[in-house]
Length: 295
Image 1 (tube, one colour):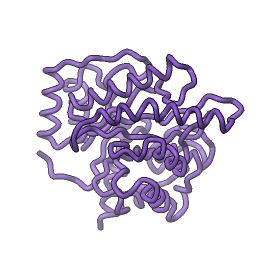
Image 2 (cartoon, helix red, strand yellow):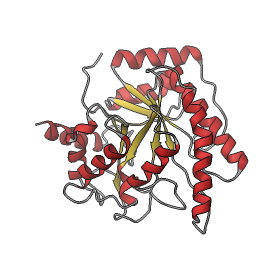
Image 3 (cartoon, helix red, strand yellow):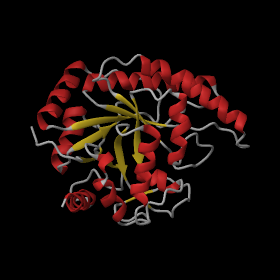
């Protein structure tokens, strides 16, 4: 087992040949310390059942290596959708992925917070969507058992469309809708919150952003960081990830994130171009920034 790191660094890997022969082999090859996977088609509704023997081996091998694992729910999930079939499928997919998290030993399932699909952006439709979020997610959260149950990790979007939760401040009503359930956590995607207006490109901007997350959710609700630079300027509402230090956020924001007390124990998962490939520079850049923050 590898020594426990304050902030293990990893990436989203494809499963390909399977959780062990595909995802885990890629992590070993590249040298990452944590990983995120899809457990099924990211653009489909089908519930992939998994394979008990492979799930067990993956779980055991991750434990042996000290690898912390996360699942990302499919992109189609929209818990605020006014379309009944989409809403029902979204709830079912979230519940299924939380079950898969237990089976493979993942500590959390990342879910996009959704939109209310109303071109007019009316308050009435927003309120109705938040009620659907509550009706869909609270029973799923209540079904989780024990302190070791996986977290449901809410990932604010970049603000495109009629987002229910984009800027950090939007997390407050979203968590209110879920009664601040103790297994409702937060996944901070740096590109997303920057696109929605967070001043990560300013000195102290990343620190202030995490301070606000802690103010809203408490000290232990931030459980995962998606570490991505942005191809676009702050407030552009565009979800276009860039390599660390090659976009409009820059490296200082990540140095601040590594140093913030509230990120102690929080993994950083890359979703940048080529981040799962051998020789991708983002791993070494983040390791360097992590070391600088710890010095």
